[in-house]
Length: 278
Ligand SMILES: N[C@@H](CCC[C@H](N)C(=O)O)C(=O)O
Image 1 (cartoon, helix red, strand yellow):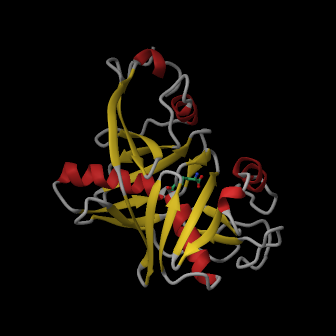
Image 2 (image 1 turned 60 degrees about the vertical axis):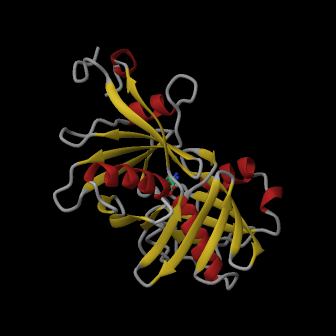
């Protein structure tokens, strides 16, 4: 048995627009997550189940630091919806309406809006092929793939397809195939979007390392950026996802994303579950 947590390891379950997360607060001690723990915990039958695991750590330069893991045990450089969820929790902890955090993508800021939603500045999009990264130099506005997708980085890679009807796409089949296309040496998240009104998009997503999810915050940011670059929308866009609505505003200081957050339950991982995973 692992003796580091003789009475178990506490966690929270939260979701942002249906994108669901297990959150471990490791402030005041070292980080605990391993690929094996993320995989076991991410299993919806034998673990708790999540799209991403987010671990909060102490930071010397910000209110807190945040790391992200996908349910297949891989790490992610960004997770917009988990950032909004954890920021909501940390605002409660600190008694504040705004927080500053450090993620693998860099420093981010989040604020609570008057209606209770949480908005985060996800930074400026990455448009150079080396930043995504892609396997070789190509025009990121028009990737050399059937369907003419756009590549946008938000601290993690996204491949955005504009289609006449997002409902008609076989997201499982097409998403899985594009995720591992050789053009993406670190794999990619895949978004399928269609214009449904002025500055309004329907978006469905296949997430790298997690498969189909009900929402993806960085994916919504990437899709809004791509839609503006393609001349389909302005810089403020509303996206309808399977799990809820996200509002994106691409401002001079970065891409802001606002949406709902919910804390679902608090739980405890038993020492027996943790055995051999830490
Ligand atoms: N759900 C996310 C993105 C999570 C990471 C992604 N699967 C990756 O591997 O890049 C979000 O809300 O941004």
